[in-house]
Length: 320
Image (cartoon, rainbow, N blue to C red; front, side, top):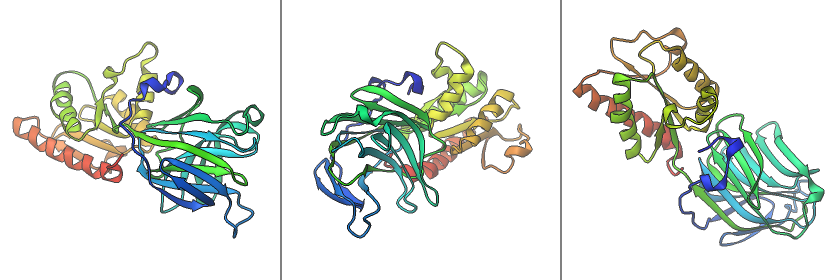
């Protein structure tokens, strides 16, 4: 996946989507296949002009798309992702909302809706006109495309609170979502390690094959070099990733810098270190580490342990 400022829908290679099933959580809705129509607020909550509906689809990385039309420029139609059914927290991105044409916001329990980014004026939206709206989600980045034009791109404040996808509507009714589709990409694993010798072998002979078997995309920074500053590539790769694997045997400052940034973004992280060769720094001594032996027997053991750790992590988003 490319950095947000270079994002293009042609770069989003999603798996084939299917029609979703629906459940209304707020407001009055009617559903037909991939179509959802927000008819208005709940009669018992006349002050809450909110419609919220979730699908049976989960999304960690990929796209949510629909043809959206608004009855007037005061209404809003957004595509929801990262919904947590336990807390109700979620993110949504789409057209309309207050004075804005394009909005990315987040609902946080106890705080309400927080606008993360807004662009354009709502008066530039035409009532009863279908807009092709796509939200691309990758790592901790989200981009909004309207009629194939990138209008918003933003680094999210943290990992998604949940995995459910759906739609959100604001207004008195008449917001239509047609041909809602959820397209998925496999999760990405970014590998942080020193280059050369046994570490290149560990990456090519252990880490990548284990990830391949689990339908995970494993990359190192040398896989994603682009013109420009290498530190930008590293930071962007960590943001784009869903899981971090860090080999910390040698006390390499670059590796620990990247590991620190990964921890700051709250990424699930797996640490690897050669047994007997590593004295863990205080800051990471409390983290779970896979210790391995640099032998043929040790190779099979670290494969087993890495597979087990990855399964534990991706069990929370197995359906992506």
